[in-house]
Length: 228
Ligand code: ADE
Image (tube, rainbow, N blue to C red; front, side):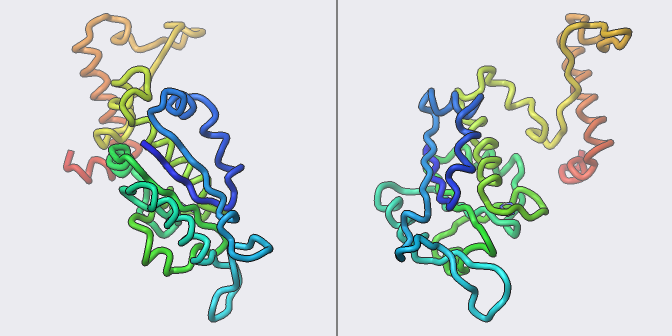
């Protein structure tokens, strides 16, 4: 997979890709991530990419021309499956969206800033608008990092234990069950006996029950969604 990220703040975005699972995915050539500084596509000497909004009102708007130039250049080199715009008024990211995006080959992610982008950018170039939650961030960069993390860890070969993504919270619209590691007894606080039993069918059944119980307590909406 190749991901091209268009941003006015590439430096804000780079560090998440420089550690742990994302770095390993890049080192293993399972994904490549490319940053494009929108200012490099500015058409004026001051390298500005935003302007006052028509009709008045506080806040600057990102101009269409630098974005058009950048996206056009990328699209001339390869086909893209989606041009994603990070925005609080997009569809809320969930595991289903991450799963489907992880199957694609080439993605563009456009990070908004200030009041966002000129509506014509959305009308002409954007194919999917994604929010990472009902709160407003200073820009789309952190949202883009969250989105990339959620997608990249699902690419086959990225996680060491292939099954571990399958047992994540949300994969079956259930939250994950509790997990424990050594010691089995910490100052009198014991690990549930069943996990030490070696009876794997019983352990699996216990995990399913715990996942269901936890989902029922914390996120009953997930159960309603699937009539569980
Ligand atoms: N940009 C600003 N707020 C955002 C959000 N909640 N999700 C994605 N991009 C954003």
